[in-house]
Image 1 (cartoon, rainbow, N blue to C red):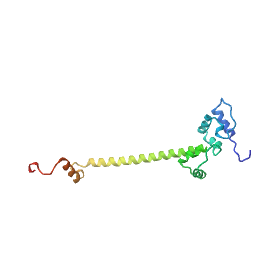
Image 2: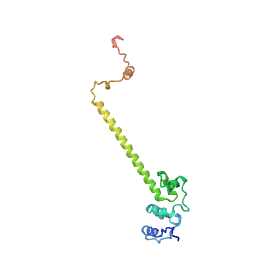
Image 3: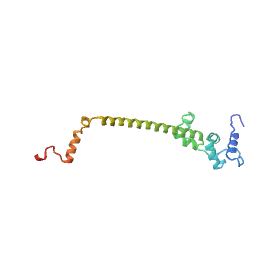
Image 4: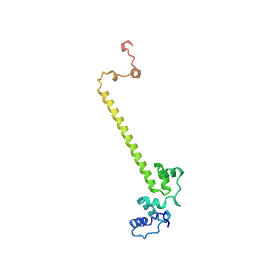
Length: 164
C-alpha cells in the first residue's frame, strides 16, 4: 500500500462490530454490492463519511453531472445537488445539501411569517383607525358610484313618490 492511499479498514471494522456484533466482519468492501443491503443502508445512515470514503466515485456508483462536479470541486454545492451526489455515493455531501435546503426553507418560512404578521398589523391598525372615525365622518360616506348603484338596484329615483 503506498503512502497516498487511506486505509478505512479499522473504521469499517469498528462500524461492523458496533452494528452487527453477532455476525463475522467481512473484508473491507470495494463497492456497495460487496455488502448486504441492510449493511449498506446502515452504513449510509450511521456513518455517511465512511460510506462516502468507501464508495464515492467508484464503479457501481453513478457519475456526477459536470455542473455538480464543478460545484463540488469549488465547494459551492447547492441544495438541488443532493440527488446526484447521493447517486454517486457522496452521502455526506448529499446530507449537507439537504441540510442547506432545510435551512433555506426555514428562513423562507420565517420571512414569509414575518411579512404576513407585518401585513396583519397594518390591516389591524387601518381597521382601528376606521372604527375610531365618528359615524358622520366624510370618509365613511358611500361613494357617488355606490349611491347610484343602490338607487338603480332598489328603484329609487330621488323624487318623492307623490311626484311620480
